[in-house]
Length: 286
Ligand code: NAD
Ligand code: FES
Image 1 (cartoon, rainbow, N blue to C red):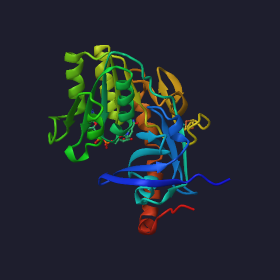
Image 2: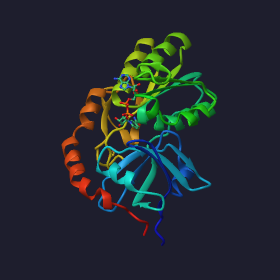
Image 3: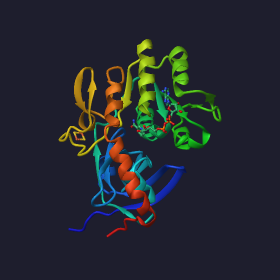
Image 4: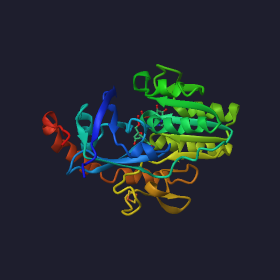
């Protein structure tokens, strides 16, 4: 039987270390739903990394993903070009987002997490909700997917750390304003852990149900290895099969932060070992 080709058909660089890839993966988009993710292996000896499905097209047999080059695997991924292939793309994995009619929903995205928020916001618009999109970025140049978010037809508000676009400050300022004035029935927040923790802490005070999408370290993605375990409401959960979305008011964000740092030293050593080989790295299709 012929091996499936996970071929890169589009590549776009958003900023110095953030990239978008469109890859052929014929079966994934026939089953994909908002909030789910894929596990990717770049080459045969490579590790597996989870990446949120940013978009997918069943008729093309393609999936889109956005990633930040922060370690050896994502460095390798960033070095591939159109016509190169990934070793494997497995998915869709994880539980889909709960996309039913809630009423007013604030969709809150921070930095690269905006990529995971996009299909969730789209599904919530399609489910008939009154959606507001609140985006936080360090500056205008790092704000991603604004055009796609605006195309959803929901109002989009922006906060930048340096004030180069929208209001100056963290996205939590927009969340606080919305909580006080617009009074959403639900908040969905995706972004860096301190941002999801801050949003959850804020909305707890207003009694607004809040969902966050956890970016835990994963290995198999199917509930077998326990690598992605987190604590929600005092119970151990596996992000890959019980999530990745959880009640933000119940998540132990300190534990999540600690677990995300467990392999930091090894990751840095691996990245340094790979750096001299980066210029000659590629992974053509076989
Ligand atoms: P960043 O540090 O540039 O922050 C982006 C925005 O988040 C800021 O502009 C601000 O508005 C908000 N923010 C950050 N810290 C905050 C705080 N303490 N309080 C309130 N708001 C805060 O983000 P980045 O470097 O683009 O993001 C990278 C992070 O996003 C990585 O840690 C990555 O793992 C995570 N990520 C998460 C997901 C997910 O599914 N949860 C997906 C992709 C990336
Ligand atoms: Fe192994 Fe979730 S990644 S149990």
